Image (cartoon, rainbow, N blue to C red; front, side):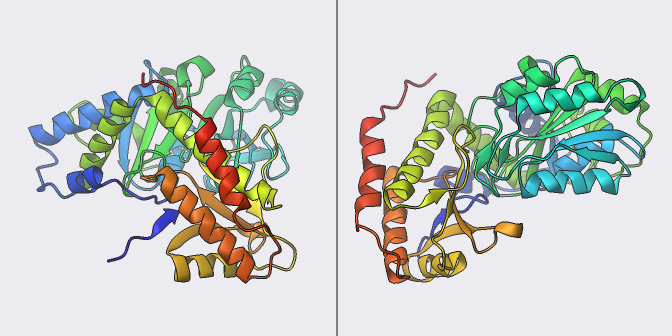
Amino acid sequence: MSKSLLFIPGPVTVAEPVLTATAQPMIDHRGPEFKALLERVARRMKPIFGTERAEVLLLGSSGTGGLEAAVANMFGAGDRILACPIGVFGERLIAIARTFGCDVDVLETAWGSGVDPQALRAKLESAAGERRYAGILLTHNETSTGSQNDLASLAAAIRGCGAYVVVDSVSGLAASDFRMDEWGFDIVVTASQKALAVPPGLAMVAVAPRAWERMDSNRAPRYYFDLKKARDFAALGQTPWTPPVSIVYGLDAALDEFERTGPRRVWERHARYARAIRACAEALGLEIFSAEGAHSVTVVAIRVPAGIDADAIRKRLRDDRGVVIGGGQGKLKGQIIRIGTMGDLSQTDVLGALGALEIALLDAGVSLHIGSGVQAALRVFLETEAPAAV
């Protein structure tokens, strides 16, 4: 079977050692082998979350399942929540909170930008006394717009307000520095099929001590996604429900590679690929959708020229060149293309995909200087020296 170059925002291309690990013989998910595997993976995830205090739980679900678990366990009907969406997935968090009866107030941010810390601080200061927010919902990295929040600045704006903070880092964690303890977040959610480059099937949820106290007083209903139940079973080296054992094996293998490479090299690889893709787009005269200072390191969103169908470009890339990229979602459908940096991709893969993009744009009638985009990306790779592993 021919290999496609997978540049979508997830699932991503999985390295052979990880795929091999997922093919290991099945074991008893209530036995000692799985207990050792589960405890090892949870322990190794903690430095990626940037925590020593939080407990890391593994849930058999997508990232959205992890987000539902975070909301359902922390909040309930009538709780006043401040949501800070910067795209489609931030809006999904709002929908989850409203499904559970929360009273959601929204701090609006233009798509492509990050949340303004001063606007966030002002919003929190205006909600004093009985109108104080019980919780805040943040998105770390928004794949629908190729934008990323400066979480350190947002954490500083939030500090002292007393609200419980839930962070969607499904497409952000492991691709850049994350400091859960330092930033004071209560629950952070990620998933297997993004920057850690494992097949889909696992959500990883880090829960700070303060969040457990909140759950004790929250009587909102939950069953499958009961984090207290997951915590009780984790103490036994188990999960409450049948876990995707093969995916846990894969995550263990992916963590081997992450640790062997070193986090700084992994972070810089994602950032370097994103810079190269942006450099290519700019050299071709294309507009980067995300604002300066809010660029994602895992997804680059690019506006296509007026009169050009973005989905037609994507189809041509897939059918003719085996290059698979993402399209616009919601109100951006047909207007942008999205190129991911996550997964088992080399610099050669990136350059090949960008060359294929140039050809597809030429075939669609876009006027450009052939080769200029690839040359711009290549200069980024030649000028950027990877840091030493740590």
